[in-house]
Length: 59
Image (cartoon, rainbow, N blue to C red; front, side, top):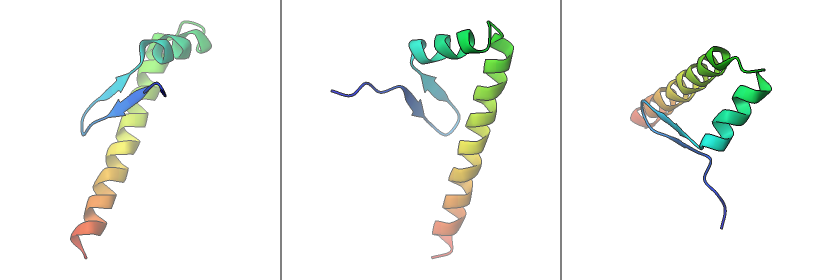
């Protein structure tokens, strides 16, 4: 069975610990950069969701 790595809700990213720690390792331990990247990713997903909701309300 496939492993779920990330769940995105309206205001949260629920991330697999392995994925998170691998991202920190790839950033040479710069957890603040990883935190910023994850916040940017969440903001992008939220904007996409809002845009999609806007499109659906026009139909």
